Length: 117
Image 1 (cartoon, rainbow, N blue to C red):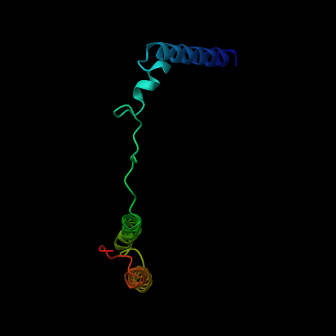
Image 2: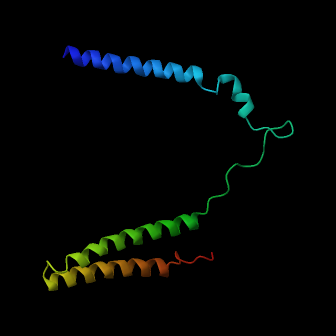
Image 3: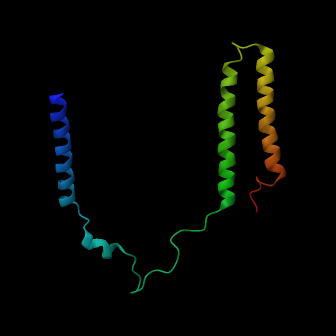
């Protein structure tokens, strides 16, 4: 128990010394905050730093991820074909692929997959 307290104290002491050394040696200081602020011809910048976000692109990316995960879920069914009964394997695979196709049809019918919107 006594040894554990000594080791813990040493670790904390070394950590504090390292943090103080890093603080003293680091290049950035509080005086450099004004230097890193935006400056353009004597005025602050007015334009936005970020471009507008395309929600359609985000939706396409989410749909891609969903179908990608579904494909990863289909891959092990090929491996289990030899060790499972043929009827139950076929029924499970058919139901899973049917659910995937219904999701694809729903997204296609609602126009979620169109790139030109």
